[in-house]
Image (tube, one colour):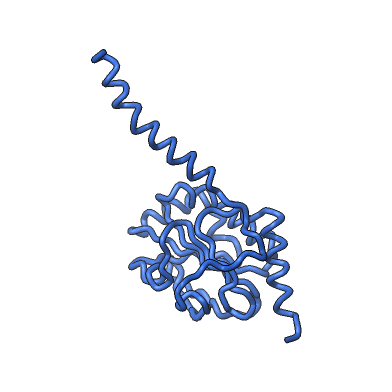
Length: 192
């Protein structure tokens, strides 16, 4: 019986890790229904008040620029498996939206070297127009918006008011997402 214990002790952490990954993957949500209510968040998140940021390489990011009717603040980290899984989809969505969406992707990594290593696998993150990587070095923005898990996203409409808050992974290139953004963009042109 003793010769079974050592292999079990070796396999147990692997089984737990695989179980965790499968649970996280099964919780992957499609883009929430566009008629669903926004999850409640503190007033700090209700209005996009950020105007300028510095990207992780020191360049300027103008958040207030009106040419993108939709702005997404997306929180992620290189050590977050669901974030890694979602990242290419987020980049592809920005490309498909042809300038109608600006993503500010806040890295919650502790070291800039972690971002640099991550970007080697996702070079398009640095070359895609309207996709900006910002290192939230001291986790200030994350704390201000009370981000509780990664990935987490805040979608702001043309009026710069919070339209949707999403905790978890999203299928950013799904038809539901495209329809939601189309509806949100159309709200900019509606007479009040």
